[in-house]
Length: 162
Image 1 (cartoon, rainbow, N blue to C red):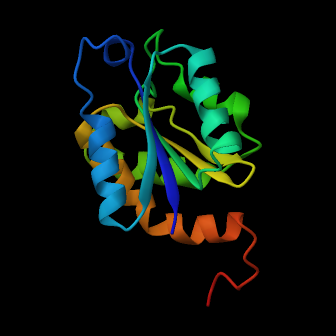
Image 2 (cartoon, one colour):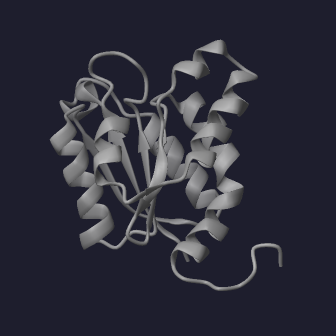
């Protein structure tokens, strides 16, 4: 079973000024696919808080998958991709490209998404937008590839085409 963490990045959410709707939506969708969500967090749009949460979930809790929601745009407080990039060991650009491509069919605003996907050790990290709709649409694109990606990240040597 894949073990996952969902980290919501939101200043207002971290202060209790706004109910987090995107994190629970990610949890619902992951669990519907049989993925165990073992950890959920809400952190402020602060690079150090985001990095600490990512590193803790990957290195200490040994999560197979970390999904972040929020902070992927271009406002001055949108720093999730920047913080994520600092902790990644390898980027997986195809996942982020696929999410942007699918989202572009729905809104031209998708082209300003800076979401990333990549690896830290044996943990797959994927940035998603901060709205429930954005989570649904983007997670739908990458969910089919997640089990295979996690299997390969964990060292499976089976052929990809089999």
